[in-house]
Length: 87
Length: 143
Image (cartoon, rainbow over all chains, first blue to last red):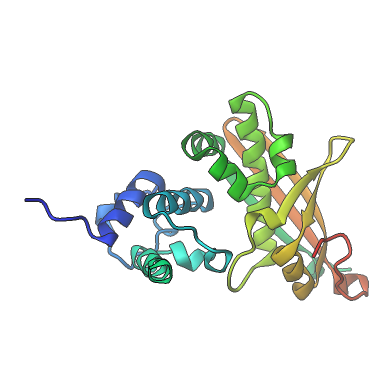
């Protein structure tokens, strides 16, 4: 039986589809800088919208900062915060 | 005013990426990033519209490079490209972007945009209110 994908697995899937990274997401650890790995500002908008669709949340303006989308770990922390608020 | 009083921001956007975003996210993408005025100015065949939208996105990012937010970045819609009746474009800041400009003592802003061969680019140049011997104000911006 397959295991449920973790939050970080789902984040990595969104990044693979939308971040336009110069290297495969699987080669980056959770704290690797996604902007240094090739994610553009415009690609980060797509990542944000795809995360909102997948997790049925909306990033408030206070979270619209480069650091929110800087790494898998940073996105994981932001989503966890938003999900705890909406729970 | 001296050259030290000027701030410059530039940005380059792949037009095909904007076209993909419009196709994938539709209105959600448009209404999250662009104002009603900007959306109205970018009507037309998808390829043409994507070029105009990409130039505006580049303008917003170039402006952010001038504003240099330390914390939360202003909403993209608080930086608006306004098309004037004569066809030229200028920047209008409101909300958090306008407040940041005042805090940084920036303004007035000059904007130039272009798009061709799959890419859109924008350059924003800002004077410094102190460079004009005046205090920064909200004049020309909306709160």
